[in-house]
Image (cartoon, rainbow, N blue to C red; front, side, top):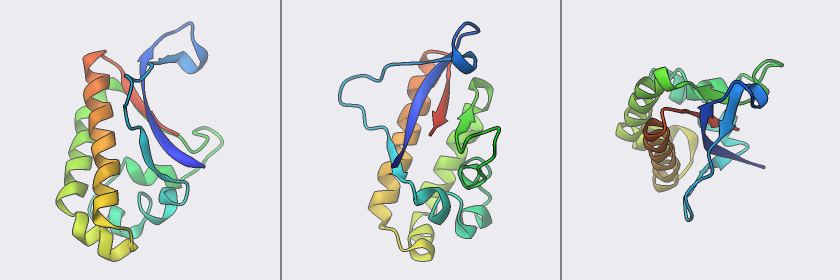
Length: 127
């Protein structure tokens, strides 16, 4: 299993009140293998930096099914979190053992998804 990021738009008639937007050809949507949920995004190092969105991936509940959904009104704050992690990627890499370039690739995918979501007044979901 791997974690992917998708853009969604609100749709009251769709499942869970959202419609997933089809990604443009060639879009990279991967944000890590399943173990990234706990070992990187939910790690103590990520939390110590002040991240609040991505650590939720490690907090699997019946309600969230392990998904992280960011609504349109919170995209700017989520993007700021991604920037914070980019700025501290060497620290994250040292603390988690994951390659800094790999972490940067996944954070770039997240930021690209945020841009696509903003363009359609939607949100993002990592699942």
